[in-house]
Image (cartoon, rainbow, N blue to C red; front, side, top):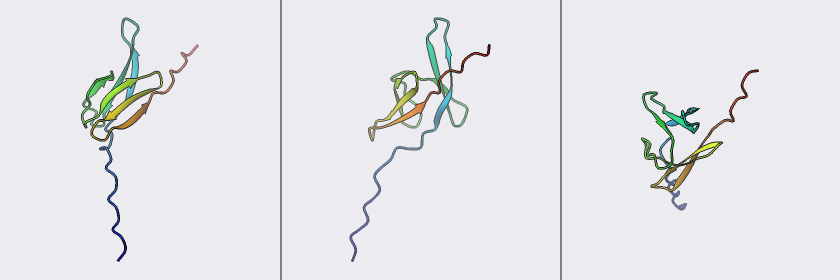
Length: 88
């Protein structure tokens, strides 16, 4: 008989979060806001924030939000598009 087919490697659950937008607070600090696919939850992405679904925000850079799914040590990246130039 043929050898058994190996089980697929475990994978993290589907990411239910997406970029909603960015803004600046009164002090000028840039904030990155994520929204859940149910559109009923929003969160300011900061390192250490725990998201529903088991993901954790590990870093926020100029061009991405980096998430980690700790049980599998899997990193997921949500890209942040460059800011649009103001209309002149």
